[in-house]
Length: 270
Image (tube, rainbow, N blue to C red):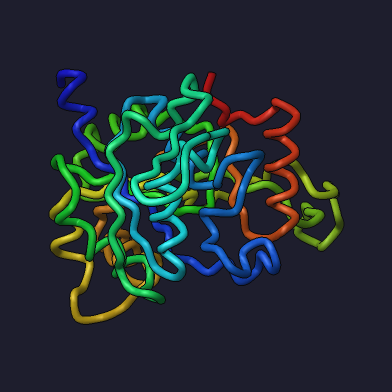
């Protein structure tokens, strides 16, 4: 497959969540707009996909979607210094033009319902995407996953859908027990666990969305399409053993923000 054909894939980012467990950090803005360093979480996700030249983004908006629209429209002013004149006809221009921010990305902002569930959001933006496959990810997860390898894995196995199977960071102390209940190993909050979870960074054939994503019911990806695809043998897992972390609560945010500010973020580009 030619490189330009492989890159003709849109990425849907689910941006409608309220981030209720983020408390004051996401009280008035959607979760993907919570900053990591001086950039919204959403920017970090798009920057990682853009590293692999996947720059056609479809943002599935929901609660407070206008905040994301404002960022997309005015990012060059919001992310740097600017100057201009007020009044009728006045215009403002960025002063630090060396940072193109979101350019030259293609971004579609689509309202998918204030409180719609994730599968419904994907279904409602599918016709705004290009290519035979559609990549989908959540608006609250960061990783150093190889997007080219993920997409190649999906195309090689020939099934309808792929999720990324990642090892989450350990949230609790873990124990390993013998058959009689004796503790053999105790690990206090390991860096990663032995179990795997869906880390987002998914790929769907259009047929998967046509067949498995209902139009008449509002459902989550996990409770509807993914379960049905797995039942029918059409769901594969791309195993990623590198970095992955979701921003579920203020502690996750603090960890990710500290990594970025210390220049130790595995997802940093350049």
